[in-house]
Length: 83
Image (cartoon, rainbow, N blue to C red; front, side, top):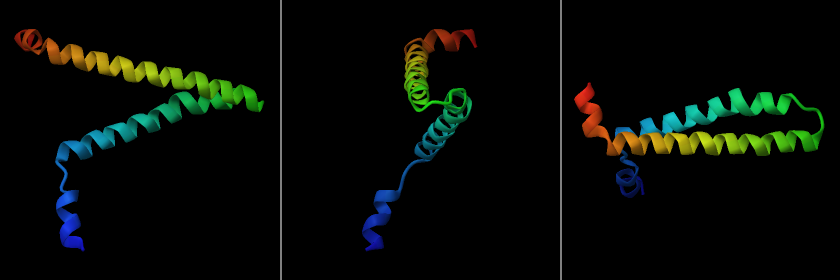
């Protein structure tokens, strides 16, 4: 059984690095944005609203990262000339 599963688990190093970076990012979001937002309010509906608004912050951060990555990808020739 393990002989057939082992080749499926052979991932490149970059997948582990991207997974670790994603995990660290989610932990940072939870500790730096979500936890203070939830701790600032006492009522349940206020905590729910704060968590809901925090999801917009998370979406904005993800979108900003994607756009910055695409900009670097498409403009790498110009960026590498500056370096």
